Amino acid sequence: MARTASAFESLRGCGVISRMRLPLLLGSLLLSSGCIVAETRPSHPHRPPPRPPPSRPVAMGYDEAVRRGFDQCRARGYRCELKEAHLTGNDVWKVKFRVDGRGEKGHLHLDYDAYSRNLIKVNDKVKDKGGRGWDGDDWDGPGRGKKKGHARRDD
Image 1 (cartoon, one colour):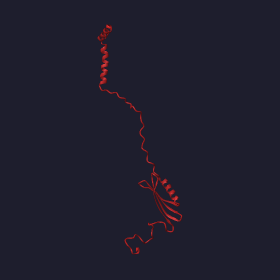
Image 2: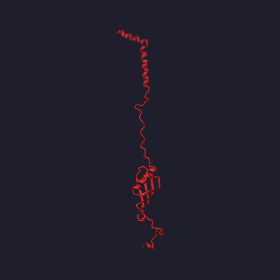
Image 3: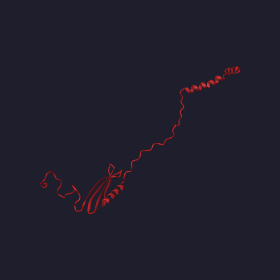
Image 4: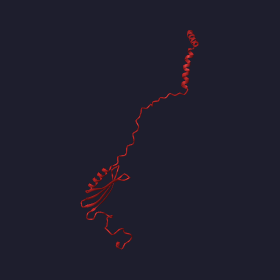
């Protein structure tokens, strides 16, 4: 054993131990200096971007609004002649027809929601050719005008 001790002492004298301590000392100084090694690649796999929200349904066009109007008009048993159709600013299609059928004549106005395509309003101004059919807002003939106050003929 004495040989091992003397061999160790002989190595110390040669500077082998001090050469081994130097890299250890330098390595520990570098690690304790606060350097942090970080991975530049994310740990989770690449995710696709989220899907966009569902798009709003496509608005009904002129041709579809007119076709739906003709279908509604014919379902009521009228011969229909398109007067006009237009889209308002609040997304409502107004489709207007002149109608004729079963001894009746008049107008049919239909309102459709442009996106849901629901029939919102029906204004059916159709009366018999004999003059009967409208209620309240019929034209009473020439010469009367608007009534202003109480008149003798109203008694």
